[in-house]
Length: 350
Image (cartoon, rainbow, N blue to C red):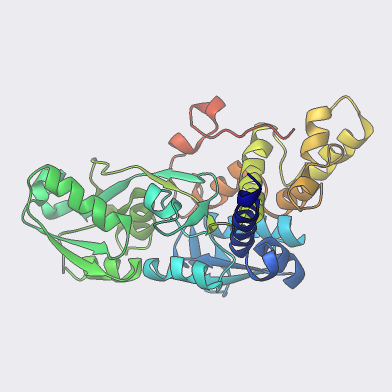
């Protein structure tokens, strides 16, 4: 038994060092780097209205952008302290691995090959938009279903799950087709509008987003078939538990705030009420009056107060960019709270 102890001790030391190495230089979490820097570097698309889009005034806007602001508000106390990095689909995971960005909020599908260490090795936050892949065609094309596209050309983004899903769907039906591949969504849309393909495919949210910018949006229709499940979620580089945990609870906090009807307009009043009423234990924990929950994540205890001040709750973010009065109206559907017929819910803050 005594002869084995040095070996066991050495093995333990190696494992411990390996665990620290995943966190970055000196074993520090990237969360510490963000807080010390005082600014979040957030990877986005920048080309998808409703999600992340560079406006004429030079500012980014969209659901993914507001998530960047929510993370910055939680991590450094200011939702405006964000440096946005527009990235194509093939660039996004490399940017995470190299440390060019701190996290990715870029309509990215949560799947096994991206999550596990042998693939992209990222850590996903909770799903922020439940989507599905579709196909867009011209209304006067005579195409009414996927089967009508047999033998046709289809524009698609390369290096995406969209490309694989398209192939899977046509292969399962025994339908031939010719993919016309492009590096980013703008190129895919341009190829479609220039007549280089009979249809283009992407997440249905992106199809609606792209169509909203067409000269005659009503001349184009999204086919009824849904080719896949596309749960979209922000993510960070794998192996950094502290940053992943902090991101996870910011997203859960946005959902919880909507469940509790805490909004950008009333968050300060709600916190004052909770401070003065010890019986409001759930609200007190959530807004950092008691419980020290933020400290467990390496954040201020009232981190959700700053988040809600900056962006509002999840429902406010959704309505701002994808609601009925937005440029890209998309019915909430699955993206509603579970109490409202959707699937969004959050674990308790306790």
